[in-house]
Length: 209
Image 1 (tube, helix red, strand yellow):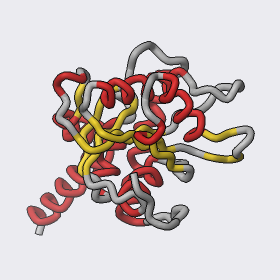
Image 2 (cartoon, rainbow, N blue to C red):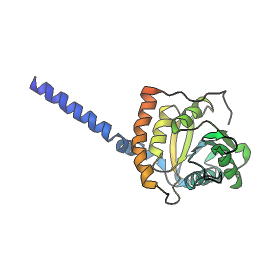
Image 3 (spheres, helix red, strand yellow):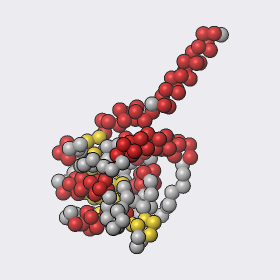
Image 4 (tube, rainbow, N blue to C red):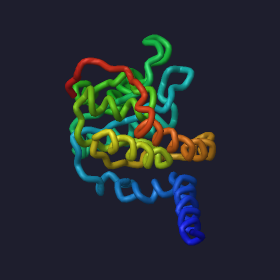
């Protein structure tokens, strides 16, 4: 009986350690799907760019601008055929991430018909789920910062979008340490969303890229 209790105790300890260190384990697990150089990344039908906030002037934040510049490079060198920009759209006039993202990409020489806007991508979960269910995306390159890529890849792949990631870090960012720390907890939220809660998202009719 003592031996059985010992094995149960050790099992609980292992489970607890797995839970505590899951974010770190996820980074290792997803590292083989993450690329830092455009010339090395495999081709895919679409690049999915996640929103990352707008400045007070309505233009993309530094982090979002870098994501868009990297996505533009993937399109211009022929790695992807389309770019899906997914973000929040609180109001058309004052805060519209997808519209600002599309405008930025057009200025970088991307044809308007190569850009699709998802106006209901308020969170990573929403963007990945809608990429699959609304836009019918089976494969994608996820374009975001390095700290966000493990969770984004984990989420999109779990929701049926076969994904690889492209690092969009082109500079140091304000509050970078804070976002690294916040991401640790966001991974647990992703676990809950994917396997326990399955939160409701904004639906809609199927769209064509």
